[in-house]
Image (cartoon, rainbow, N blue to C red; front, side):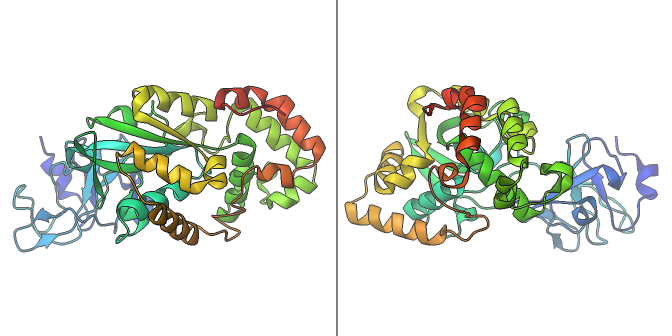
Length: 353
């Protein structure tokens, strides 16, 4: 039942949850594109999934309340054609969330632990199958909300959507989806490089919580100080960076979980180091996963375009090289890393020194 008394107390411009009917805006969370936004930013956000209005069609942005329900935001003083709310009050709309993700298509997950080369593979997929659209349009990021645009591709006789995610396979936002998993492209990287790249990304993004005493430092500054041992021990003890632990789990569980999420023949594991060593061969493996073939000339063009669009820039695309830790860490730091993190290397299939 709609609480009409509560509805009359709503401000003219506000947001309501379509399931639990909570009006407290402090309970709301939202997202714009691929970026998380604050409570304050959530109100003006819009989604290109229209809700028919009496006098005009509004474009609404789906947002989520503190209880995990989807909600909608009314941005104009018009009543809804399907829910006759007062023209002077906020719209209480029905749940606009689609029953399935990506219009019910089967999903091929491009899954990787953060900072493992996912964006590079994503660009390769765009160059292979969707060169006329942006990377985000071709292979959208899924971290819990539906996406406005996505590319469709046939695999194993089904129309599928390729979606990027850093969520662990056991995450409720993955297990709660009714969509069938058609396959998994699983990207992994040497865990020592994952740690260094994570520290760099945290420095670029200004994530104070990642650093000791919340003092942001560059990777070079950390390596030159005694702090590096702390980050190595923390990473090896948790099996991951604490920054990502809740959503991704540890690095080993992430990989083994996604392996188990699909049948063996539906998982293609890609190593960042192999991509760097022979990208054309990796392109061939990816094409074979989709049942496609590309000529040598086409593969070379795909590699060239992908490299150009993910070229080293010192920030997001930081060093862009395999076994970066060997070139940056001191011998003592590397020895300590191997001693403390051998179980992670074993779990991911990397050799110990």
